[in-house]
Length: 320
Ligand SMILES: *[C@@H]1O[C@H](CO)[C@@H](O)[C@H](O)[C@H]1NC(C)=O
Ligand SMILES: *[C@@H]1O[C@H](CO)[C@@H](O)[C@H](O)[C@H]1NC(C)=O
Ligand SMILES: *[C@@H]1O[C@H](CO)[C@@H](O)[C@H](O)[C@H]1NC(C)=O
Ligand SMILES: *[C@@H]1O[C@H](CO)[C@@H](O)[C@H](O)[C@H]1NC(C)=O
Ligand SMILES: *[C@@H]1O[C@H](CO)[C@@H](O)[C@H](O)[C@H]1NC(C)=O
Ligand SMILES: [Cu+2]
Image 1 (spheres, rainbow, N blue to C red):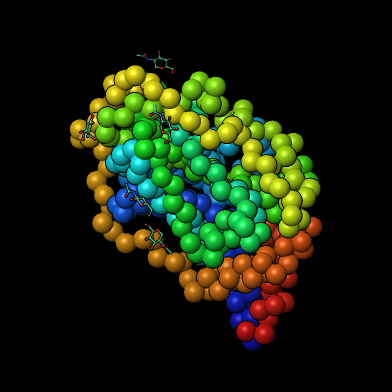
Image 2: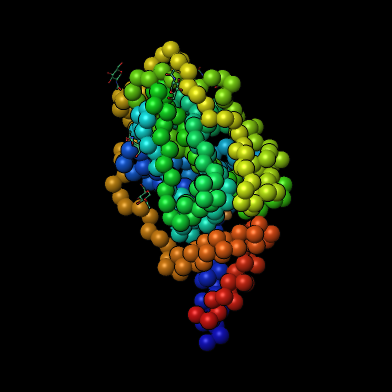
């Protein structure tokens, strides 16, 4: 009996070691593009694969660019100016995204003079196209992600055709009352934008990452992050206004809807299966705790110390 209990608690402990999360898949105007599961799958994808679901720590960490050891992806997802890109985040256990505090931000960068399946993102010149923080009811939009919703961003309606990296990022701020506590979860997806629009960002709206963030930016080190009435200040540049770039193609990478060998074919397979019922149940417990006791989370680095947390959870689940 004792060994059975131990085995069960060990099973429960696993999901915590694998908490945090990653971008599971995107869809563009209804077409699904699956990502890979870090450390698990490595199929052709338009989403750059990271090698850990752990957060990037430190605003100047190289991985704040596209995520932990992000690998160039093989495919490009087709899009048009004004396309809706839907982002589907998963927890590290493939349950729901586990955090509820902090912003979601989306940036684009052209892939310069090459196609995105050749482009080193450290050379990216990013411009911001979207940011989502707190809602009128005081909850963060990130809470909706934790509740299992997707987040959708529209590409600028007048975006110049060509290849772009889409950097969609969650910053989890549950530990950000201390400098260095913020958890960065960047993701990079490779898209090919068609059409014949001419909007380009002004050079003053372009930033590098790392570069655009500092550990003491108000939206990254935020002692008042749990105050209901505090006004959140997004890090990074303002959302760019596109100006007339005067050309219908930003490079020579075969945009404008022409197909190329590297263009993605829409995935027809089903989303990755949820790993186990067990990890799913655990995730909702985290969600509940975080919702009811956000301050407790802020004062305790539960997610940084999975072993300690699992000891707590062993107590909670001992009765099962
Ligand atoms: C994107 O979504 C909005 C809101 O649902 C919709 O009005 C719009 O037509 C969509 N755009 C495209 C290109 O499908
Ligand atoms: C492409 O851009 C890179 C850096 O952005 C530069 O080093 C390289 O010379 C360029 N190649 C061409 C053919 O322009
Ligand atoms: C989120 O997006 C994915 C991919 O498009 C889709 O399969 C899933 O049903 C969406 N989830 C919700 C809750 O809309
Ligand atoms: C290009 O622009 C013209 C209008 O200038 C429009 O009629 C046409 O549909 C556009 N082509 C694409 C592929 O969007
Ligand atoms: C692109 O669209 C934005 C938003 O509608 C607008 O502010 C901007 O002036 C447009 N730029 C061009 C070059 O049409
Ligand atoms: Cu986490």
